[in-house]
Image 1 (cartoon, one colour):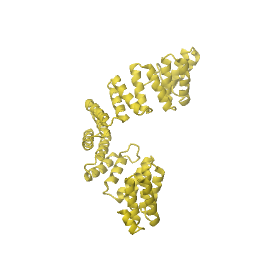
Image 2 (cartoon, rainbow, N blue to C red):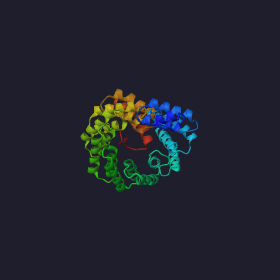
Image 3 (cartoon, rainbow, N blue to C red):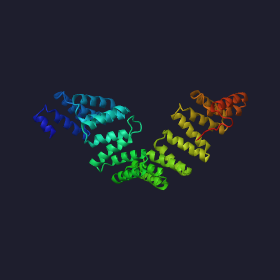
Image 4 (cartoon, helix red, strand yellow):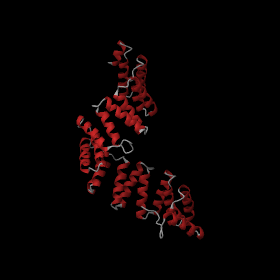
Length: 364
């Protein structure tokens, strides 16, 4: 239909824009781009063709071009809420959270009954790293979204999170349950409810939800990692190890899982495996002095003093005032027969830690 309209009226910019959008939805990106460019040519004062290009760049994951195109669209058509909404999402992708919030606020101002605009602003109020973080305002926005779209499961999920931050666990569980009812194959919803159950000290329900999250989305590392951490807290280290192994098969360089598995190996007395994980942690996070020190201490405990010394030296080069690393090096010097150097390090460690007796290595 749009093609017929263009044949009849070849300067109809709206037809080019709408045909371009239709082509985007069909995955015909190059043809869509041609339509948006032609739309710019026939109507240079309209923002819509630029917004079309922005949507195309979003599909291509070209954040810079998408932002530029949305900005041009807004400059030409500043009254269109959708343009601010689109640019806000791209600002969020670029980690420009204040700019994202400003765009979402403007989108709501222009379209106060837009569920999409209210949802994005509500999410932003709920977001951990937002300077505008306000969970009560998030709930207010999400209430309106749910009133307009009562089957929008993402809104229940976001509101559940907001209630969780406000420590209203019953309301949080209620909203997670509603989200699950509406979208039972979304693992994150079970993961969220599991956390709420955990705060309510309902361990069996928390574990069951983590198991369900894995069942519905078995390729998400976070769910295995969360269940592994939960099992660690229960002292079920062998079961925790299996889950952490599974998480690391999916995300082999994720430091949280490596750290958790390293601690499990330590609890189980698996020295070689503990050292292997510490080595991986240091490879992924070479600037972390504390884990370099822990690796040095593991080597020391295994009697590998000559290897332990350069590792603790690296730790101290990153964090010279670490009492724990100085204590580790003192132990290594003592084992190597370098008694005077050991005494100097023990004394420094005591002074820094302001202790009068034992320096404890490897605090939990």
